[in-house]
Image 1 (tube, one colour):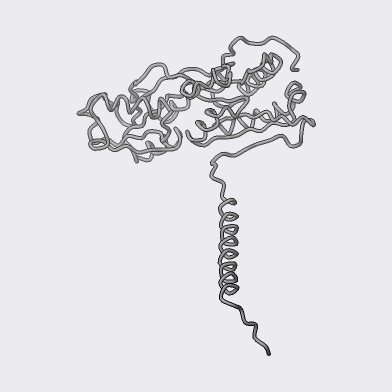
Image 2: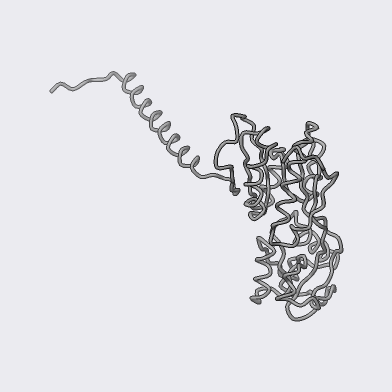
Length: 288
């Protein structure tokens, strides 16, 4: 058998080619593995089939799964939406980061968010988000299980307090932290426990994991908690608002969306979402 002899230059080029190929192969494999892991925390819903050949998608951003599930079939069946869009995509955000990145970049045509988020990014001016409906303002409270919380440094020292892990939540984060700071309290002399939802906080309170939570007071709370053991922190916290992108004077779409919002509200199990006020309510029947 004859051996192939390579001169030094050819041998060096051959070895270099192997290293380059190995590096490229490793990058492609790693890139493919990384690409499979989506960094997003959102989930999405769409119509079962395309509404038309129109390539425009009616994108909706919500943070409440129950609203999304009720709104999707109504939007997919709406005559105006069918006429103007090829499909509906509802994005369900899970945290503040989701809300910030979608609203900041003007992604959704329709969204249900707090007004402070839209105001913070100037989204109403930049993307022409118009407030078309709103759910009620509400109060923020310290809620306890066995006694009425006192708003004093002496009382709150050493208490375990549950708040929301969402910096944009007024009743669950902003208001309680403002009150505590005003009383000269911080992480060094109280214990703050962070939760992902108001429901999680209530579970923690009932289980004895925390002494106090900061939240709203709802009708359902009267069944398991005592109204004698709540202390008001702020009387009027802005409620959730529906925003529609109105870069065009698309009154047909405004009417259609308000109709859908009303239908969702009428059938929602939570009283908070059943209470909704329309702004410049449309009386047109063209979206039927």
